[in-house]
Image (cartoon, rainbow, N blue to C red; front, side, top):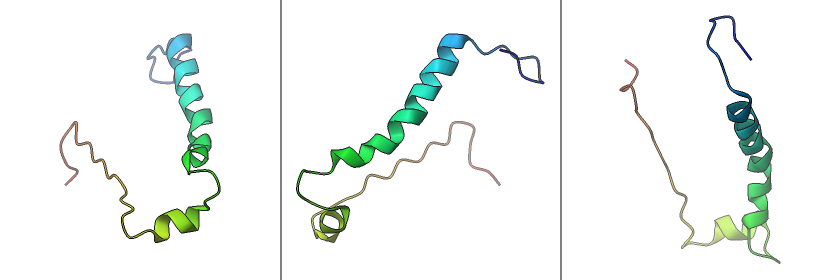
Length: 60
C-alpha cells in the first residue's frame, strides 16, 4: 500500500492499526458489571488518566 507521498505501509502495520481502531469502542466493557458509566464517574475516588506525548516538541 502506497500513499500519495510514495511511502510504503506494510499490510501487517495496516492490519494492526485497524485492530486497534476496532478494539477502542470495546473499552466501555471495562466498566464493572452492574454499574453504569454515570455511577462510575460520580464516584469521588474515580480518577482519569491523562497522557500527553510531545515526541516532536510542542506546537507553537
